[in-house]
Length: 451
Image 1: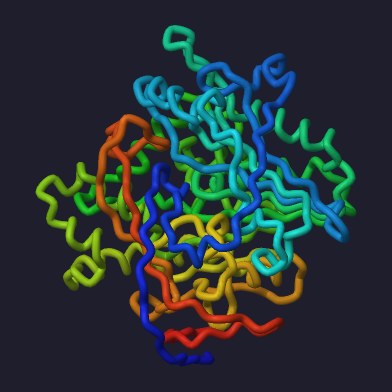
Image 2: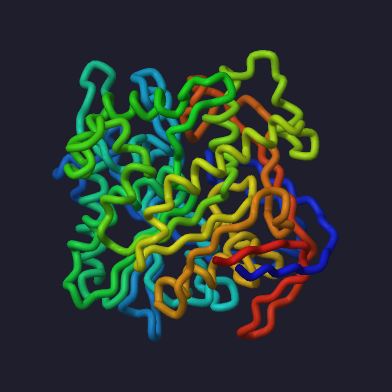
C-alpha cells in the first residue's frame, strides 16, 4: 500500500445554478469564462417519426454534432444527455412541457465543454474526435418503449436511441476506428444499458468502450429507511415498459426494477466499461438518501447545505453509503478491462464541466485528473482503478451544496414527487494552478491510497 500526502491551498467559491440533476448554468467570474466554449447547433433527426422514435410529446428527437479532424477524423465520442426520469403519468405530462420531454423547448445551441471540448488544452485525448451530444426527451434513460394514448404520451427512448445511432452511422460513424459511448447521470445509466448494443454497431476491429459518469445509482435506503429511488425506478420501469430492453441475463436472476439499477447491471456488460462517480453522489444525497419526504422536520437541512454542519451520525450515514457503493463494484473492479475513478466528493457529473474534467484545479486522485484517467484507460496506457480515501481527505473536490427552490420549469422528476421543485448547487473550488505539459501534479491536502 502506498500513501501520498500533498500540501494545501486556499478555497474559493463559485456559485452555479442547476435546473436538472446535472446540467449546470455558469455564473463564474470573467477569468474562468475568458475562453468561450464552442457552441454547437441542434439537429433534429429526419425520418425519426416514421420509426416511432419521438419525444414524450411526439416531437422529433435531436442531437448536437461537431465533426472531428486530423488524427481524430475517424474517432467518435457519443455523450448521452441526462436529466432524471418521469415515473407517473402526471410527471411525464409535466415533463413534456420542458426540454426533457419535447424538442420544442430544447436549446438551439449547446456549449461543448469537458469531454466534448474541441481544445487540446481542455480535452487532451478526445478534442479532435467527432463529438456528439444526444438529447434526452423520453424520461427513461433511452430505454422505454410504450405509450399512453389517453395522456398523449410517447415512451420511445429505445427507438430514439436506435434512430440516433442510425443517423450517426449515416454521418460517418460506421467508418469509426475508435468509439466511446459516454453519458452523465440518467445518461450515464443509459450508457451502461446500451453499452453492449453500441459495441454491435461496429466491426471487431473497431476499439469500442463505454463510460458512465454519475450513473451509479444505488438501491439504498434513505434516512427514514425507505428505498425512495427503488420506488421511483419501479414506476419508470412499469410505466415505460423498460423491462423489454434490459439484459435477459439479469432478468433471469432479478426483477425488472432491480435490473434498472447499475449495481446489478454492470456484471452483465461485456464491453469495456469505466465507472466515474463521486462516492457521495450529490444528486443521490439530495433526492434518494435525504429527500424531503424522509426528513419532514428538516433535521438534515444544515448538513445538506454545508458538510461542516453535519454531526458524527450524519457523516457515518454518508460513509455507509460510500461503503455500499464500493461493495457493489468489488467484482466489477476485479475485471481487467474495467476502469474506475471513485472520488470522495459531494459532486455529480464530472465529465461535462470543464472545471471538473480538466482544468488547473480539477479534482484528482493521486496526481491524476479525471480526463487523464479516462484517457489512460481508453488507450490502455495504464490500468485505472482509482478509489479515493474517505471524506474529508480529498481537498481537490468541487463539492456541491444545496438550496431548495421552486420554478415553473424543471428538468427532472424529483424523487419526492414534486414536479415543480428545483435545486441550486454551490460548487467550491480551489485556487487555480497551472499544469505543465505531461505533468499533472497539484499541491492540495490529499491522502491517497493505492492498492
